[in-house]
Length: 263
Length: 317
Image 1 (cartoon, each protein chain N blue to C red):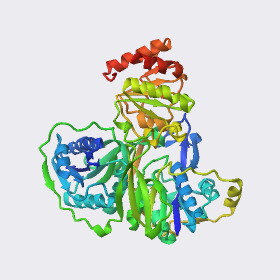
Image 2: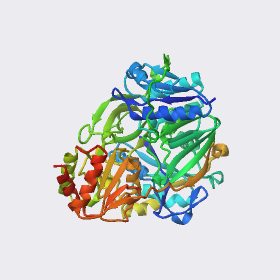
Image 3: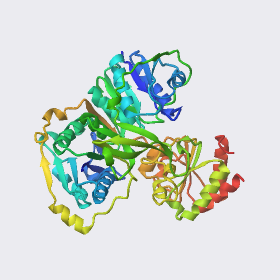
Image 4: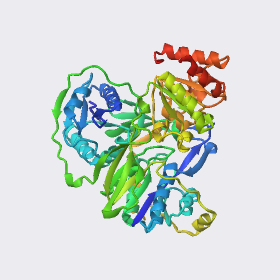
């Protein structure tokens, strides 16, 4: 069985930052492997260690700068990586779900995996939609927000749990091939070992253009346009209660009674 | 004319709150140009759900009587068929776990753009302006798009629709291709601590890293008992295994909007704030007057929680 894991380098933002136009100024941005993708990589590597997966391949859409981040997945045990980039993608400030779907479809069709794991969402723009969109586009099955995957995958079925709201999990059987979007907490992502990090430098990282994955440059034309970015208005008009613990607890007690929620 | 189709969310016999919020969001969009608001309810006790969803401003409720619980294949097929029938400008679904399990498929199937996790929406009939957050709520953005779209809305951002409407309730005869249903839902399980749903609580006593040790949770439990409140937590407490996952407030936990949220020893990392900033009244108990939680708190006690919490418990004994 072959597993493809979609991974993304996400921008992280310092506590204090400035906005320039519709972007956060560069000097306040850092970069990291998307948290959800880290769990997806770990799940794939565990399936490989259990002898269920033969090969784990990662795919990302990103510029050369992100290679160091993408190699983290190789250091944790993925076998090889694909990075799709193209001059046409340079400077695009909103790569929408449709575009990501089309690009990733090209890679999936080429790689022909049995299972695609993606993170539930990315920590920066948080669309949370690409995995399911991709599955539908491919004619694969899917399950969103998976927080448990049975490691047998026999008879072409993935038995999963989906993390619904309110502390309820849905127990679902998904026919393969499928895309599963992986929720944090499904496993405990490992730290890359020094040996893993060294090995990762030698693993294959294949760079492909849009043409290589059979996608027209027009894919970047989006119906969506990012028109504004701003800091949410702060509602910091906190009333600080002063005094002894008894006095401040008394103030809070009065508040609860005023609100009508005290017993 | 901007007609809008909203698709209700329900689980195990109950409509979820966001269904009524969808009605409000949908009505607001339809009002901009005098369009109709259509509500779809798929699977389960659809007639009962339809009666409940017939609130002020709803023009039609379409019921799809197929199966009991959510199945993304059924929802995708039924919603795309309703779209073809009704030709609405916008399809609105909740940005819930189930919403995210079919809305992207609907968009892809219909070749429509999708905008997810919106917190505000405006339209002039042609251009939709959607407000969403990025970077875990550090910034808000507006995104514009022309023409029809699939849009998911965040829960608790719109008020629930009220009143009684005079909608036509119509059974929609969706043609569900069973061979195309590749997932089977075998059941549900309440996890970690039974069926406590912190998102339904009126008062949350929420505990964070400041509690220091697992055994100190006792004073939090005692306070919750005294207040008849529910205990919730920030991520480190759940990661440590001190409380079950279903008590976790935040981005990867739950979004809560209680009347009163008492944050005890919680610094207020953005991921946590994303899950509780919609609370009516926020009280922070934290020794650090500069903790981020103070930015969104309405009231604060900048004192040692180990003194304040027992004193508050005493107030209600």
